[in-house]
Image 1 (cartoon, rainbow, N blue to C red):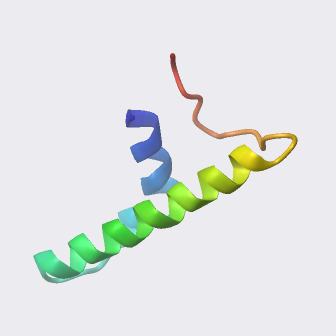
Image 2: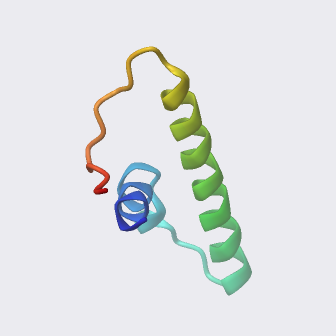
Image 3: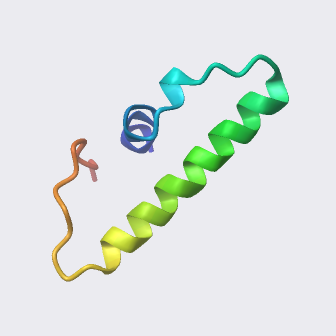
Amino acid sequence: MESGFKELKQEMGSQKSQCRNAQAVNNHLNFCMMATTLTWIYADRLKTNPERRHKVKG
């Protein structure tokens, strides 16, 4: 789970969020998580999975 959040922050740009209110931050993070999840689902369906920057333990 932690590796997923780390990848989310670095790859999808949530560290650079400049939102000013709590609802905007929440909306931005939800969008980033949805985009990351869709990317992971797409990558999982490929015949050869791309190399991930952060390895999943377990």
